[in-house]
Image (tube, rainbow, N blue to C red):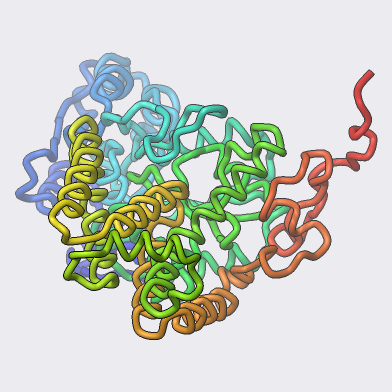
Length: 513
């Protein structure tokens, strides 16, 4: 089995360049040989009752097609229609395609590669005696999850629908929100064995040409046998593969993806995955939530600042506590220092090991709560944390301040789900630096992290766009969310081709009368 430069399976080599013939039985034997050993592959022979010479066969995979559509729209019409009036046998296949078979999409093909890929994807193959071409009939029908609010991104105010594992359903959810003929969709298949259907989605006139071309280039270079989720592609196309910071965004919410497209980004949909990827992705997006744009801008700005502050504190608080308590006690008020010292009395384990141990245990309990069924997971998370923390303090294995720091860090981490993985990695790196070099190690780790962030680019766009440079309107939607009547332009670098978002909002500042 070989692949072409786009990763599509090439079957002709393995089949010795076999092609369709005018013999129905030979064609059936060809495909039965290709799918030999697959019990779900079905061949159904039949013939028109008015024209016995019109021998037909449909080939499909059980469970991949809609049986009702297959019977009512394909088999029964071909069986019952009077084809004896069609004298010219050369046009019989056209007669069936245009006048008999009722399907929203029918393709004519003699290419083995195309036929095999279509049948595997759930389409029905229609063969007719005397023809060396076949009809590929759209008849997919398998069980799909209903559209529901995603568990990972619940909201108090806003749309409650979320993406599913069906790429067509997901595209329809975005199309409902963006009724613009400029919304373009390009399909392609990735994975030599899975033949996973993907599509690039963007708005022509808003997205930079370079972003779409770069995304297509990176997808063309993927040579992998299986793509079972968008996470495969997310890791394969990202910038800085060894960095803990994501340079490709992902979301389960159609409203979020629609807003990204309207800002000039490109989206990548992957069949069988509810997570849609967006590029470019900048650091400021990690602190944003879709509810920021549905609530009052003052309330949204406060919440965004809280998320940003909590993300920073989640990896700096343990390191600062370790550095100050161990190396720089003079920085603490005397009474606080005495309280911490009294709490540590009788604890044989150094503070740094206590912190490492408790943080690891907290992450284990959190992971267990995620993997277990919802009711049991919540019980494990709450009871496990309380029981372990209380028991550790009473047994003099750790001090109470260490338990408090661990609990605070865990809560701060959960406040921003987009940065959970990053903050866990940074937390241990900062803690290790502070354990060896105190506050100087903490400062050094902070500088190294900042330099690393400044060096990252996502599809050519600076990762720190808007965070370190407040230029024109780029900072209106970074640290805070400015009022809608002031955000008249899109981010300058991302939506460079068409900056205008709305007309000037000066008149809307006035109170309505």
